[in-house]
Image (cartoon, rainbow, N blue to C red; front, side, top):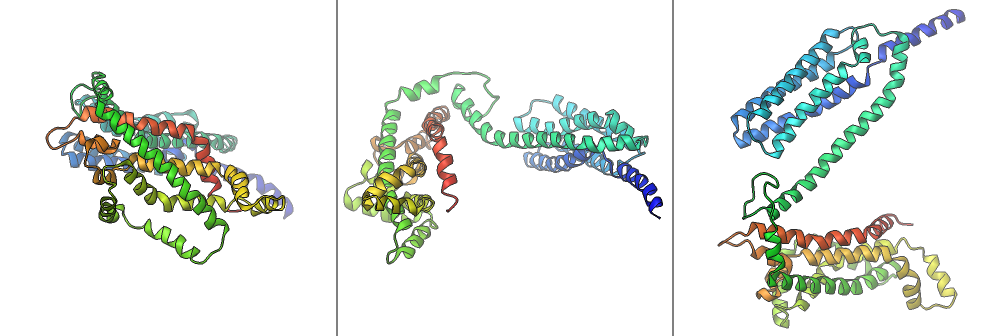
Length: 427
């Protein structure tokens, strides 16, 4: 019995290798075409909303072709070369439909994207199933040795395909971010005030020149800088001691105060708009930068306190105890030990406060009725009125306003990473 088991084991091993081997190209195509079918249905829905009969017909044909390819791939197995030939033929038909759709007339960017999701998978399908190793497998001439080598090869091929698919997914994520920016840049560089047309058909700097030579733009910038820096300084002056106190000290009402900070974040800011206005009017702070600084600081304070408390909790208390033993008082411990260690969290909080004030629109619009006190968001909104829309100037100004934000993120990138990661884990 032992000898017979030993003689059967190589046979079982050979059968398993031959039975379970499927080329990695076929497995990748099955996964890919499941996504292609979904995207084709999304494309059809978009074309139906646009009421484009030609594209509706071509998209419907692509759905049928993709479903047929997916069905053939699911049935493709050893010794079924005719199915493999069918995949090549139907993929060629899909390529032909893409070419005809491309030649049918001018399209917008999203049309080319949807055509690409039919063209490149079809091209990949023809290339993959035409490989000698897939042809050998589909023809039923697979040997045990080649099956074993194919199983070993699948590991590296699957890693490569996975890397390619991940990069494709990341490119789509990047495109969703970059395309709106490119569109705004095209509007800013195009003559006139058109929002459509081809990308960068004609380039002009007239909108940037008009904005940069406008006295109003520099007044709005000055107001925004004053309000944002003032909000950052006042917000940190209030949030740092509060966050440290909530982190280190036990006092009556501490839990209720922390809960109230969370509670106020649940309500939209428009609820406090009227009370804020009445308070600012009573204090004579309408049309002043001080009024906006106070309002922004109070609005951002709860989140800033929670961010700093989370970071202070991660600083070991033993450091403070050692400093107290060495003769430091509580103020010296805070300024010399805790605060230097907390600079990443302070940088994150400062950036959050600055951006919140830099981008805020509603309170600035409500409290400032004089154009000389407009901040940049309110000033940009004034470019688009009921009597005229200066889209080119608006796009150019939007890009200029975004530059300080980009620069700040680049400068504080290291602090952002350290602050956000350190504040996320306690201990």
